[in-house]
Every structure is written in C-alpha cells, then in structure tokens.
Amino acid sequence: MDFESNNWVWEGMYYYPRLFGGIMLTAALLGLSTSYFGGISVPSLLYPFPYLSIFHKKKHEKKRVRVYIDGCFDLMHYGHANALRQAKALGDELVVGVVSDEEIIATKGPPVLCMEERLALVSGLKWVDEVISSAPYAITEDFMNRLFNEYKIDYIIHGDDPCLLPDGTDAYALAKKAGRYKQIKRTEGVSSTDIVGRILSASKIGDAPQDCSNSTPVGEADDKKHKCGAEKQAKGSQISHFLPTSRRIVQFSNGKGPAPNSRVVYIDGAFDLFHAGHVEILRSARQLGDFLLVGIYPDQTVSELRGHQNPLMNLYERSLGVLACRYVDEVIIGAPWEVTQDMITTFNISVVVRGTVSESNSSMEGRQDPYAVPKSMGIFQVIESPKDITTSSVAQRIIANHEIYEKRNTKKTASEKKYYAERKYVSGD
Image (cartoon, rainbow, N blue to C red):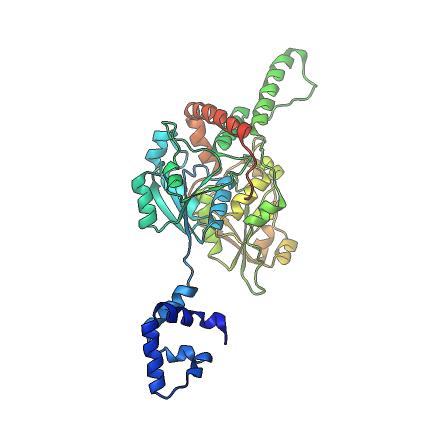
C-alpha cells in the first residue's frame, strides 16, 4: 500500500471513527471485501462522499505566506530594489506600502517624487505583487490589524537599520511585540540621502569643465587653483561606495534567454537615476515583442553626451536599477553608442526602439546617427514616451530647493555615518 498517498484515510479513521465505521459497514453490506481498502481503489470508494475531501486538502494544501514592507521609496535606487527582493524571499507574496506625501513631509520634509511617480516605480519592480498607497509612516495598532485581517499579512519586514519616529520610538515596535516582524539586510553603498548629495555636488561643479593643467599664466593661477580645488572636492563627494559583485547581478537577473522564435525588442540609453519615465517607456517597449533587451551606456559615453558631472549613478548601479524592472528580460552592461549589424545579428534583434523624450545635449550634434543601421534595415521605431520626466528634470527639483535638501542631508548624513560606525555583520541577503 502507498502509505504516503493514503495516510489521510487513516487520519480520518482515527479522528472520525463513527463516520468511517459507517462507511465500512456499508461496504460490507455491499459485499465488498475489507481487503478492498488496502488497494489503490480506496479513494474511489469515497467519491460518493465529496465532503470527505477536506482531509486530503488539509493535508496537501500549503498556505501562501504574505509579507509586508513599507517605505517612502523616494529617488528609487537598487538599494530599495534589493530590500524588496530580500523581503519577497521571506514569503510567497510581497505587499508593499508606499508612504503618503503628507506623512513624508511631516517626518522627513518634502519628497522629491510625488506619490504617482513613486507608485509607478514600486509597481514596476519584478518582486512586487501588490501595492498599498498612502501607507502610514508608523505601524500603528489599527493599521497593523488591517494588515493582518484585511490584507492577510503574516509578517512585517524592515531592514537592519533603525527606523525611529520623531519622538525617538521604534516605528516597528508593535510588529516586534506581536511576534510578526522579520528583518532583512540593508544594502550598503547607496541611499536616497547619498543620491541627493551627488546631485547637489554635481550642481556645484557646473557644466563647463575646468582646465586643471599647469600651463596657466601666473596672474590666473590662484583663481584657477581655487576653482579646480572646489571641483575636485565636489567630485569627491560624488564617489559611489557601491561594491559591485557578480552575485548581486545574478540575484537581479531573470537568468533566461529569449526563445528561438522570440521577437526581441532593443532599447538603449543611460537610465541614470531610474525614474517613472524609465518604467513607462520600458513597459511600452516590452509590449512590442516577447523579450526586452536593454543597452546601458558606459559612464564615459554618458559623460561625453551630458557633461563631465554625469552620470550620477555608475554603470553597475544603473544596470541593477534597470534589471529590477519587471518589463526587462536582459541588459547589455556597457552597450555601444551605435547599434551595429553585428549587435543585431548576435542578439537576434527584431526591432530597435527609442522614446520621444530624452535628455537634450548640444554635444550630440554632429555625431553619427546611432540608429543608422536599424533604420536602413527597416527595423527602427520611435514610440511615444508616456511621461516627460527626465533625469535632469528630477535633479532640478532638488537643485531648486537646495537649501531644504542640504539641511536635511546634513542631519541624515550624520545618522548614516553613526549607523555604519556601529553596525555589525548581518548574515544573508
């Protein structure tokens, strides 16, 4: 007898002896041998009693674990994405709460991105199953009960960095007390505070590069020394502390190539400071085929196109941001500026697309058309950009309110330095 497959029958006999005794008596009256119950046909005998299937269902159905994580998700970056990836690994379904604009203003100051933009970014991540808009900054008892009862949440997740309310109390104290709290590892090397700092530093450098060579007339030496010193200091504060590893790239990748007959769509760009405009254009591009391949320009190309203070995020940071998007299947890390015939053949590209909204830069004038080859092949297509957001327009929001953000960053930078100075190794990510 297959004990595993029929074990539920014996459990039923143990817990419901009268019910099963009646069934066996009925079987005996019908002239069936008791040996009948030792064979594979036992389940068929129970078909006239459909309500008995509850034993089988209870034995084999596994409850799906639903986990919840929240955040402001302002200036979405790969650290946010990695937090959501880790949270999803702790359950089967990930529900993400996006804190309202009003609560962010009350606790942190004005957000850079509005609620609509932040929702688009969070919803566009591959690990997210459900989004709750206008979630509270603090997990109150009422909201926690809503999570448990209405949204069927099993665990509330947060990083290993402390999240304190204005009064100094732990924002997740109630979840911890209820025994429904789990912790994930914070992603080192990036934060929204860090990115705001990079933008503010880049704005101080300016668009025109300084000649910092030694061939300067004596009368101009002091002025030049001052300008170059300020530029180097600003650039120094822009340095990314992200340490790229092959493991992180694998964690963010789908790990699957296109099928032999797939329609491969190719789109390229800098994808600096990943924003809602990027999400929407990638969604539109993906709808044109079965597999979306995204080319990400190397740092040098972005600097040549947009000025030496760019990109704000380095190549690997930008690659992770794009890989986290649910509409992207694969990326080319350090894609060439020109789409060549060899590229099209190598990746079996069916259509090359670009959006109607992009960064304008005079340095692009006079350059060879990067899409000349796909245009000549009749596989180039311009698609309407759903949003007019650009990296520059997002950066300008911060620059326009630089005093507010500089003040906030000074406070946040101090707390982050304290965190890194006191933190201990946390296993698993």
